[in-house]
Every structure is written in structure tokens, then in C-alpha cells.
Image 1 (spheres, rainbow, N blue to C red):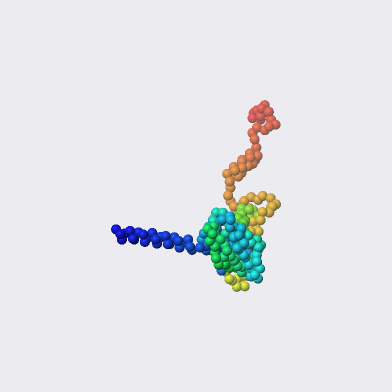
Image 2 (image 1 turned 90 degrees about the vertical axis):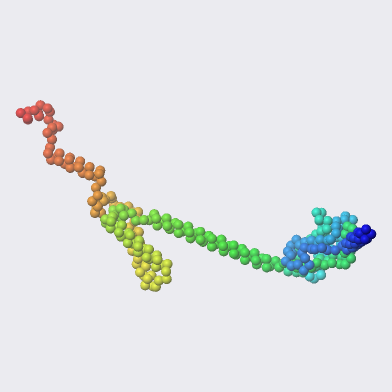
Length: 296
């Protein structure tokens, strides 16, 4: 029992000593943003956040603590700054440069050892945080490169869209420009079968020409292609929508087809012609009595 009491007393003593040591640690800087030795800070609206290990938001010390910060440039010139205590975090101080800093330069924020926490503890020794600003000329170069890449992408996309649209229009135009054998037959006097056969032949030639143009042909092949293209153009020219002197029957193209209406009209015409040759038994100029006399 006595040993147990001694052990408990020893534990309590150790806890008290550790607590005392914690409070005896004093005021110190936990972290900062940017970190000491940091790079790439923007020279415009530059600010440094400093975090302490104790609350420092004591209105009685704020004014004196504001004088404990100093920001110097690469030439040792002191910069104009303002110090702001964060109301949401009682252990953070924000140091803001009132003017834009020089790009690609090194700056040092010095915190005096007299800086005091709300508990009355002080830093005791001066602390410094060094950082470098970004080279803004490189930023402009990067921005120009990105703009050039975006512009190139837009141009390539627009070119593809225009090419696709032109191909679509060409296909529609080719579809509309198909040869109508009946119109060509009326215009040239050739039979429909002959026009269709010639058109199919020219289509095969045009397909062969297109295949040659896509490949790497010689000069002789190019000349043959030009001849084939001339022949193809003749077929397409035959399908131009031009006015003709007048309608022509399909029989002029060699067709023997007769529609029902035409056959009926020809039969009526033959019947009327036969009636004229035979005459009539009831002339319009004679009355009934005259016709009876002739019969007697």
C-alpha cells in the first residue's frame, strides 16, 4: 500500500513538471506562408502570413506589435507595410505590402524579438523570413504561348469544320447533278439506253481518275487524267438545264413505247378518217322527204 501511494505521487509530480515545462516554452513561430526560402511569390498585392504557437490577439499589445515587423528589399530599402491581426485565428498575423514589389527579387520579413503574445511571452530573438518574387516577364511569355496554342487549336478546328462542310456541299451538288437520261435523249436525239450506258462508262472513268489523283502518279498519268476529266465534263455539260426549241416525241430517240392515251387517240383518229372516206347516209342538207324520194 505504501509503495502504491509513492508511485501515484511520483506520477502526479511528473505531470506537474511537464506542464510547467510546456508553459515555460515561450513564444515561437510555428509556420509561415510563404515559408522561409520560398519562391514564386507574386510581386502584386504580396502578403506574408505568420502563425505563432500562442494567442497574440491582445488589443493592449497590437499597436506595439505592429512596429515589430519590417520588410526590406534586395537593396536594403524598407518597404511600406501594414499589419493585420486575423479575427478568426488568434495566433495568426497578416503582413501586407502596400506597394507592388519588384519582380524576380528577394525580400526579407524581419520580426523583432520584442514581439509579445497575449500571455506576456516574447520572442526574445529576432526572426526573419526570406522569399523571392516571380519573374513576370516569364508569365507574359507563358501567357503568349498559351494564347498561340489556343488560337492554333481554334484554327485547326475551324479548318476541319469548313472542309467537312465543303465536302458535304460537294456531295449534295454531285447528287443533284446526276444525269437525267430522258432529258439528254430529248436534247441529243440518242436513245435512253445509249445515254445510260455512256453515263455509267464515264462514272467508272471518273472513279479511276479520282483514284489516280489521290495516289502519286507520273506526268503521263496526269495527262491521261486530264483527258479523262475532259470526257467526264462532256457528260456533265450534256445535263445542263438549257432551253430547247420545242418538245420532241420519245420516238425520236428510237423508243417504240406507246401509252394507253396515245393508242386510244390514234384509234379515234383512224375511225374519223374512215368515216370521212365512206361518207354518211344522212346528209345534213336534206330533209326527211328528200331522203324518202331518193329511196324510191
